[in-house]
Structures are given as structure tokens and as C-alpha cells.
Image (cartoon, rainbow, N blue to C red; front, side, top):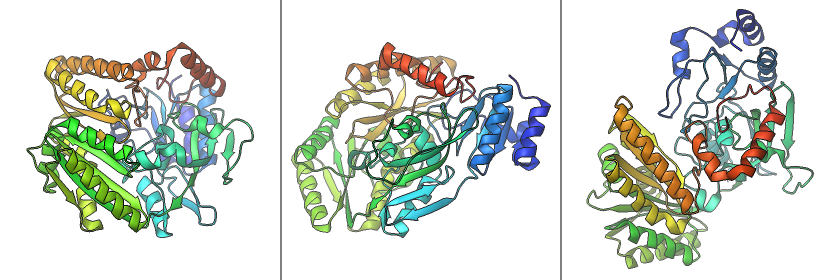
Length: 460
């Protein structure tokens, strides 16, 4: 149902008149996220600062059957925080406090609006480590990371957001506040409800507090960059590194198009005449790091690397790593519309998948830069296009279908870290099958029978 004037008055009474936005010019920034998907205007934006206020907003929404879309920084790449017309955008960006860093139990409690970088910095300040590092970590929020189950460059060794969530405070669709999980390393009492909300994209409840697991900070790190004349040689390097029982914290690649865009953008001294680049980082005990870096350099050279550059210190390592971290920004400068996709295949199928993307680019006459997490098979084909060109966007859509069909055929998935949202929703049934889709629908109906939470996302 649409928002009414009485609904708006109740929201203003709850959070204050200045924290309810309704004018069109104020709503425009909340009508889109990081996805190249059609913008839609919400009915209002409500800023909340506590679980009690979130509860109050959901009770008002429930009484009027008003849709609610939770939003943090809006950096999502699957349309998960796109508003639906006339909805309440529930913005948690002001819930930005780190509530506790517990060194004895290696945990941190934080509100959902804390940026991922602030989480990492707070852990580092007490010589601890929070590994998940999505590319948008400077501005993405931990609540959004949990809702999307975000990954990052260190996923090969350290895993993704789910691996670090020990507990959650969640407000359910009817406004009830629920806590699940705790600081215990072992807890097998009942269903693992916290895991139900990780990756749920705001469709089952609103996350208002996160309890995170931290680990000891690695004592040393070494960064290497290797360049190749062929993608297969880079892929074989990765295979041989893993076969040598080395699990680097980062094992990333860029293709020729991405390398050229990054060098033009970041000026880090990358060679622009190679077909593939590998960014390799190892961390841990200094002796182990030195040995693994030496082995990785040898393996890269044995597989025909044209050049292997080993960072002399952390500053140079950070500069080399910036080549990968700036890939999306660099590609985004090339065309009016940049669509960053997220197909993932088993590591052994990555080189064939990269070749398939190149074939699709030629078939549909599209410009695609490809980069991603070669160590865990997570591929980011990035379409450089123009959404105003409807004929070209039709070809982009056809290309998407073929890429995701191929990922599924190779035993992969339609998303490794970006989530489903609206962008991947049509591909989900083919990937999951009837039984999983039925169970997901039943879970969603059980927790949100009125269907007010982020409607139209993940499932119809």
C-alpha cells in the first residue's frame, strides 16, 4: 500500500522531522545503487539510529503494508538496495558506532553503518585482523556486507563475511527484536539462525548489530606481480601454487583490457603489452612468507612469466595491490555505463571461462574487461557500454545469459560475492532447482508473511 500523510507523521514523530526525507530532490540519491539498473523513486527515506527506531519503523510499515528497503551506503552491485516505488527506504548509515573490541575473545561488536575499512582499522589498532576486504571497503558498510555475504581479495585464504559473523541483532518484519549467536567458539544449540540472515539481502529482517570474529594480525606480508603473454599460463601458475600447498592471502588477475585501463588511471608502472597479470600476496610468519614468496616467484617464472616484480616493502606492496583494487574505477572511466558482473567457476575452469567471455565479447560486439579472484574462481567480466543505447543493451543482456549459463554448466554459480538482488533473480531458479527455490520461498513467507521486506529482490 502507498505511504499516506498519517504514516509520514508517525515516522516523523518516531525519528524526528529532519530524519524523514520526502522531497524529490532529496530522494534522488536513494533511487539507485551501484548497479546499472533502472532507478525508481521511494516514497520517503528514514534515517534510524537504534534498533528501537528500526522496530518502530517496521511496526508502522506493517500496519499499512508499506514496503521497506534497507540501505547502507548503496554500493551494492546486484540491485539489492534499489527502492520499489512508494516504499520506505530505511537508511542505517547513521548507526555507525563500534560498540566493543574484545581482545580476550577476539571479537568486535558494531552497528550496521560502520564502514568495512573502519572495522579493519579498529581491529588493526589492537593488533588484530578482520580479513574480508570487498573492493568498496572504504565506503561499504558492515551491515551491507553481512546482508550480501560479501567477499573480497583475501577470500582464497580467509573466506568471506559469513566466516566471521558470530552473532547478530535483527529486527523482524513485525518489529520484534531478536538476538542470535554469541561469543562462544562452540555453540550447536538449535538451528544456526544467524546464518539464515547472512546473505539474505534484507528480505528476512533488518540487521542492527553485528558480532564479528577477529584473528591475530599476520606478522609479515609479501606482494608479487607477474605478467604473462597468455591467460592459460597465468591459470597454470595458480594451479601449481595450490599444488605446492601454498594458500596465498591474495591471488588476483587482470586481463589486457583491464591492465591498460588501470595503468592509464593509476600509473603504477604496469606493462601494457601483456595478456594477463597476476597479483600474489602471502602473509603469516616472516620465515614462511619469505619461503612462499620465493616459491611463488619460481613457479611464475617456470610457467613463462615475462616479468615477476617483488615488492621491496609494504609501501610498494600496497602500490602494486592498488592495481587490482582500482580495476573497477579504472574501467568505469571508459564508457558511460559500467556493469560489473560476478560469475564464479571451480578454479580449474577459470581459464576456459575467461576464454568463453572473450568469445562472447566478439560474438556480441561488446567491450568487456575481465578481472577477478583467480585463486577462488570468482570472475568479474565488466561490460563497458551505454545504457542509452537500447540495441547494445539488448546484446549485453544476451551476453549475460550465455555467460551465466556457461558458469552453471562448468559447475559454477551465478554470483560469488555480489548477491542476487534484482540483477540475478531470473537466473536463480536454473541454478538452484525447484526444491531449493520452494524452501527459500517458504522461509521468506514464514518470516515476512506480509511481504514488506525488500520486495522483488532474490525471489518474486
